[in-house]
Amino acid sequence: MRSREEARLRSLVRSHERWRTRECLNLLASENLSSAAVQEYLSSDLGRRYTLPMHQEVHGEVVDNGYGGTRYTDQVEALASSAAARLFHGRWASVRPLSGHIAALCVLAPLLPRGARYMAVFPEDGGYDGYSPGFLPALLGHQVLPLSLYGPTHRADPEEVARSIRRDRPDAVLLGQSFVLFPYPLREIAEVAHEVGALVLYDASHVLGLIAGGLFQDPLREGADVLFGSTHKSFFGPQGGLLVTDREDLFLQIDSSLTWRTLDNAHWNRIAALGQALLEMERVGGKYARRVVENSRALAAALDQEGVPVVGRDEGYTASHQVFLDGDGLRSRFGAGPPGLARRLESQDIIIDLVGRLGSAEVSRLGLRPEDMAELARLIRRAMEGRPVRREVHALRKRFPTPAFL
Ligand SMILES: Cc1ncc(COP(=O)(O)O)c(C=O)c1O
Image 1 (spheres, rainbow, N blue to C red):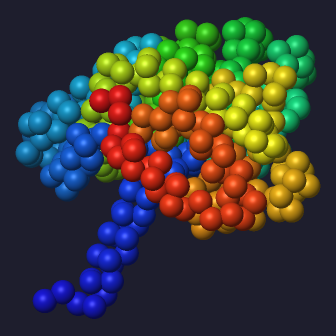
Image 2: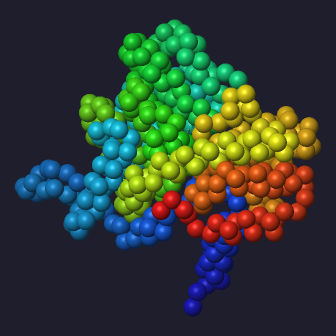
């Protein structure tokens, strides 16, 4: 018989499942839904197995793998890696990184020696906290310099960025943000970076699904040396990471340091699930990504019309899956900032983060269209005013029960 703790655990997991997958409207920019096939592979036996491809002498014999039973596992990984390389226009890819953060570690640790200096966007300009001085740079012994952006939409001015690259002469320029609305002027930045001998590393964690669908930008073709990131934000895969490059020398450096420096077990169930999501993207990514961006623009405009302060009207609001809320505007309009309003929304089963950002990826994956964004914006405005809208939220969610774009 199950213990009380087991029963409680089961009930927690099931309650979460019902709430988050059937009742809520999820507008977190960092999350998405995956297909039934992706879910199936995630819970497959591959998640209990090991493989260690090698070509090496062991006990007097040359072997191809340190483990037995890997007949299918290595083919699954090869298939997923080639799909990643094709989709992101590189020649070499690894699907081993366990997350976006680990992908950054897998790239930064082998490519930049201790004492190296790189430029990255700091959190005050929308950058990822992991690149702040106390985190990955402290772990790896790197010095990080600010790559400054401008304005509330956090955009890069190519001339300003070029000036600071020429002044600071870093070993690498790391592009990528957690708060991201618009692409970088990447060709211009890459040209100057390469001129001073710096690598261009592109953290696509947030925008990977848009890039996969041929939108936003095409980092490797525009001059990035390595692209890496999470596979579960705008990209609708399992939680995990990947990296892709067109440069064999860099790939060999990264790949040879994966096993036993940054990783051992790479979770081959996740890799099978990621392979599936990559193949789905090859088939439907264009349509999906277009819908995501159309929806985020339509949502921003509809919120603006409802009197919910958003950022970037004069710039067309957004070219990504994200919409930025204007914190000061919200406080004067609703008497609360993003954290308080996020709690009001959550009490009505609309999920947003507490830092002032909305994301259209998951509702787009469910099949909502730009014409549905007016209704969604109205529900958000009314929930922000403290009115009860839970029933309407559930009714809207019920109209879109399972992922579209299959
Ligand atoms: C730009 C960026 N890079 C990396 C990460 C880390 O990704 P993960 O949570 O997959 O480790 C994040 C997470 O939000 C991010 O925004």
